[in-house]
Length: 342
Image (cartoon, rainbow, N blue to C red; front, side):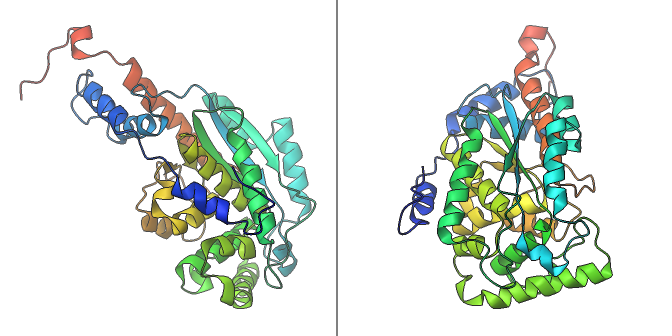
């Protein structure tokens, strides 16, 4: 999809965005017609009914299904941790990859509970991106190559993709991206991440302020924002979301950091995340404000801020239930149930 050797590496990304398919209106109408025949009061399943429509529209199938759901977690490392922005050391990145592989993380348990596939993508966690307070995190070519790598998340085939991340320091990166895209003081976007104390929070704010000042002349283009400030996991998630759109795979976005990947695409074209739902409202930073800017309501609000795709996976269980209700419920005629006379 992307020519990583191009002299203008972002051109292919813009080309893909220009060719994004829309939702299948006929599939949506077919779902609505069936909903009207199911053994329930009209609209009584609330957003579950909308989820069935959304799923059908982006899968392009009048009978939506979730037979091959997948959570893809992208792991990266960040030079900005040198500024003391995290409560945990960089060594945790490699340790958590081992934990994922051993099945010991929260996301392993959630995926197992809901029958969801799980893949982890190691984005060179032993080679952090550059410290954004000092220089660009990535070159443009590196950013595009990482987006291309993220596109491989759907290569094995899936009918519902959840995107999540892991990377010490990445809430600082996400906050810097939001500040660059939307303005406002750094303190508006910075949260406590993995649990920094007040001094750590102040260091995070200072790091975001320094990064914005350092790269101020290059932040008018969302893709330049990604290269200058972003982490590899954010670039890879943006690539995965875009590839899913081209292949008509609906996407569930996890929390605060994963939403930063969607924000880059949304800033390029507001339609670029129409195929996305947002799994949950994170307790981190100003996640609510970002979702409101998108016009998106999260499916869950559980006070979570774990990352690693956990909120996306929980929401995917809900989406599986929505598809199951739509496809498996009897119609009034099949069940010989009388309709409302009103």
